[in-house]
Image (cartoon, rainbow, N blue to C red):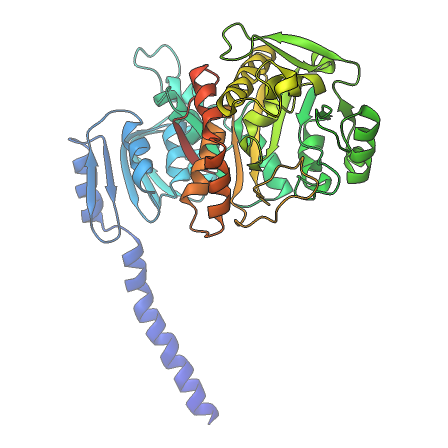
Length: 451
């Protein structure tokens, strides 16, 4: 029996040795195929070859071919033959999961990027850097991506440079504390000085708001102060004393310093070209901050249709009086009776004032989790019906809210119906329309998934 087993094992091993070389050959390009693809580079700027033997060739110059390719597909399992590969192109091939990259000319940084990401490569010629056309310095895209944190961020940088009329919105379906920090890093806008983290502290009784333990890592990463303003409606957060008690009950004071920005009154921000209001009233403590992370829980809203970056930046930063002023489109005593579109446009006006005041030192993260049709200001919100979607980040508040709305409509979850009905019943998209019209941001965006 032992002799039989020994013979069987030896037979299996011999068979494996016979088939392994054949398997390896299928994983590598033959010399003939490689030579043929290199030859194609004489009349093409980029050649993409897959394991089925299919070849695509491109004639546009620069980064346009790989960038356009990523709009429709990825490079997974594909062999890339490119005339010139610098760090920018290397990052695109890493993002697209290329199998192999060949270049007539490849820079040392590109080789390091490909090697670090376990992508096989060859180059006919190696240079220190890819120079600009006049040979007086780095190629603009090499300079652009020189300090990129990762391939995802580099892809976003390149896309935005090539499509200046389009915003970049980053996305991850994995809702974790670590991914909040990763999202901030990927957006690439460094918030400096004293940083405010604007989030919703949650009306007591509600439970859908972003929890302290979830936001703690990003707040600490920024060395930030959590900021809020008192509400305009009666509840447990309409006075500073009660609001501080609610914050304590919810545990935010245990993870960071918390500042009720209108505790000592309000300050005026001008909106000279506002559609409905010409001034916005915000918490006076806003003047104490140099930068701001708008960390928003995306969900429905009983008055605005939905609440995301634009609502958090307008109603959220407004003082108690300022909230009523926005809701009433300049008439606080009409906050519950104002014409709907006027209210939505007043929110956009308020957004414009905050954006102008922060002078670009602001960035946006939306978390699409526990998306009730009701706001976190509701002490008894409806149970969420749609499944969680993910985390989005951008430096454009219009694009990020538009992307969130689009993801809800595109969802295959039947639970989206009630949330869509809430958004449409309140004409929620009009805030996005008005904000875009005011030049706060753009509705056209590229959604880039973090890898």
